[in-house]
View (cartoon, rainbow, N blue to C red):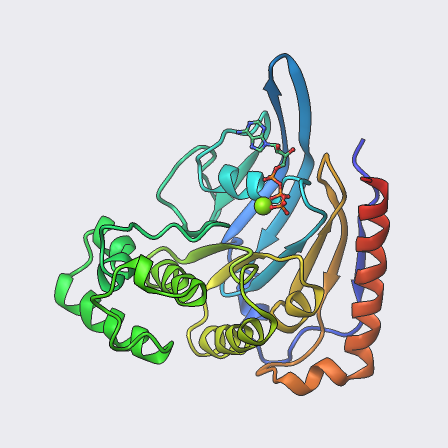
Length: 281
Ligand SMILES: Nc1ncnc2c1ncn2[C@@H]1O[C@H](COP(=O)(O)OP(=O)(O)OP(=O)(O)O)[C@@H](O)[C@H]1O
Ligand SMILES: [Mg+2]
């Protein structure tokens, strides 16, 4: 049985945002009652239990949950790399369960191709979709410069720092033409300072150039800063324990992290996460 789903809503969402309009169109992503088990050497692991969630067009949604609760598996299911045992995935109202090529995806390990230069790595998504070469190259150069990778277009991945590789992998996902982006812990390998810089950068970028985003993170503050909604997952088998609407208006700036409402939500989410983590030990 799936656990009770609570919805926490402090205030109505941003007035005048495009979200109100978006409600009348189908969600960019709808995951309905997805369950999944893996069998390895005759041992079955129940990984996801009746997970349902939505991402509206141009909405930034996060998933937080304990390690091993099936978050990356859910992304593989949405991306069509893994089939669910039960449940469906729809995009823009169209069933796409098991279909590939519908999303742009940044995996948990930034997988840049070592034989491709930074520019060619960043261009991969556009190239696979047959986007016009010259335009895509120009856009890639523009964004590389914007994220501090100007001058590194021709460098190979082993010549970049970990943070630079992550930025390049992120740009590759961002420049792919698919509207829906799945980001699996894009900042997890970064030190605290670089991570903060990247969060700020992603926030500005997204506010300027809105896409539909589903974002996995272990970092509650990051989820609160970036998202309009957060799904809190239980320990394995992962299911949606709580759905939290994040009320802060946009554009958001660092100062909101000091607001009493922000701290209250952060405390609540931390408590839920600690409880779930404790259960899985
Ligand atoms: N292809 C597979 N075959 C067998 N088991 C798998 C497979 N993929 C994932 N699992 C198992 O599914 C469970 C969930 O893994 P998953 O990577 O989805 O967790 P996660 O929530 O992303 O964890 P983390 O936060 O550590 O990244 C784990 O127990 C893992 O061993
Ligand atoms: Mg994972």
